[in-house]
Amino acid sequence: MPRALLLTVTALILTVLLLKAATGANPEKPKGVAIDRCLVTLIEQVAVPAKEAGQLEKLMVQEGTLIEIGQEVGQLDSEKAELEKKQAIFEFQVAEKNASNDVNVRFAEASWRVAVSHLKRGEEANEVVPQSVTKTEMAERRLNVEKAKLQIEQAERDLEVARVTAQAKAGLVDIAESNLRRRKIVASTAGIVVERHKLVGEWLNPGDPVIRVMRVDRLRVEGFLDADSHGRELTGRPVVVEALLPGGKREKFAGKIVFVSPEIEPVTNHFRVWAEVENPQLHLRPGAKASMVIAEEAAK
Image (tube, rainbow, N blue to C red; front, side, top):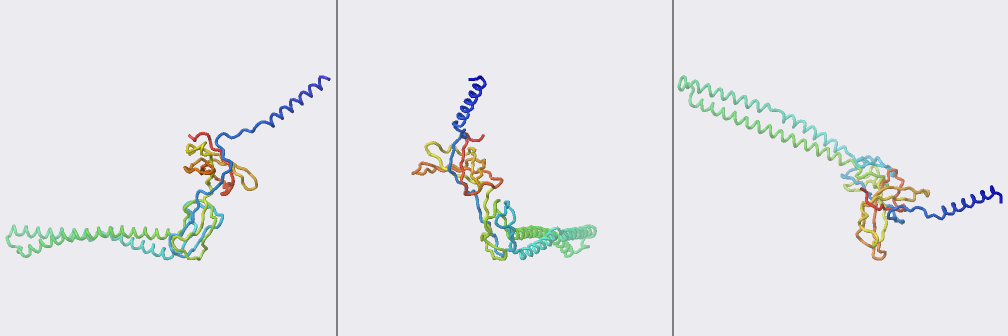
């Protein structure tokens, strides 16, 4: 056999052997505890209610709207609440002016000084010329001094009452503002609106649900493990979840184990665990099937 042909045959044999070895090799398995059958579920869904009775005046969202926590999603008729707030503000402004008005106190103090001066002049006159000011008149002058002193106390008391009244009126303004805020329907969680229970124009009572919101930026992935092999040591460990998305696409999501059930299923000898995973792009959907690999060690 010619040398060139021999080298060619040898090279072909080596290539076939290498391909066979590569084909027969086992693919590298992910390190950690694997759970093949997992289910994606919601962590949180809430019905956003009305806090006050009234007619629904505005509804700013519809099914599919993404909302943030604290976002205003609806408004009850607030005409009466607005008028009550204005009235409370006017009353507070009047009370505040009264609370800062110390004219009566200053007038009472001036009257007391005049009365004291009048009494002193009478006493000085009697020292020079005894009985130049009669005892009756001196008694009246002493009474005027005492009266002026009491007027100061009364004016100061009235001013203090005015200040307390102003504080009370300020509290009424706060209450009016609170009543106005309570007529706004505000989301208590972030998520996606999946249902509207009421329409604009309908009457609402306190507690009536207006919309239903699902939180989908963070989801739960549940699975089961053999109780003879694993336990509560899994809590807090990082996980990688691989889910089958619509269209057959697979995508991975990061999270961690947040719950290990203390209850063991007597028939299967398995217990339930779940992880919470981040879903910032909202690709993962509740109800999807997934697999999960739990890291061998907890995150440091």
